[in-house]
Amino acid sequence: MNRTPKRKLTMAALLALAAAGTLTVVAPSPALAVASSSAIANTNGTRAAEAFFNRRNGTHGNRAWFDLYDAKCDAEPVLVQFDLTSQPGGLESARNDGGCGTTFGINLPTGYFTIKYRACVEDGGPFTNNTCSNWVYDHS
Image: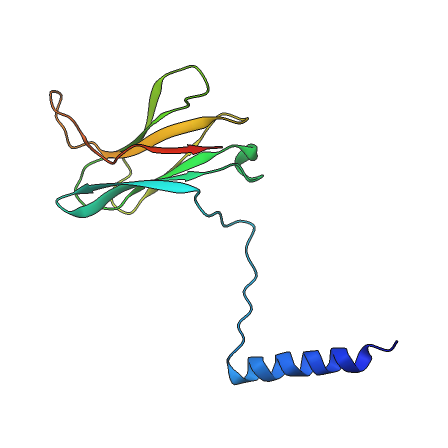
């Protein structure tokens, strides 16, 4: 069976749609990762810190990782607190003190694990608590 005419019609139809501006083709970039989940800490009613948890996807040495974003120009460092609930070690934290608009990446251990984490703004003094999001639960 000759399929050439059908292919020409399909290509012609696609070209017509593209010319009319009704067809947009976007190829996903393998370098872009979409976070599995995120935690947001707000101060004074606006977003100040966000921790994006990314499951392992073949990048970052095939490890899960955090992108810790400082969203507010308030001169306060941000941090992510996390507990790999299926591995020993307890509560850990990583800090981004790069300032407003910066993102800091944190690679996590290899292998499968469950995790709980939250984003915080380091706005508490030595005897007060920091402002943090609720705990978020995920896995690698």
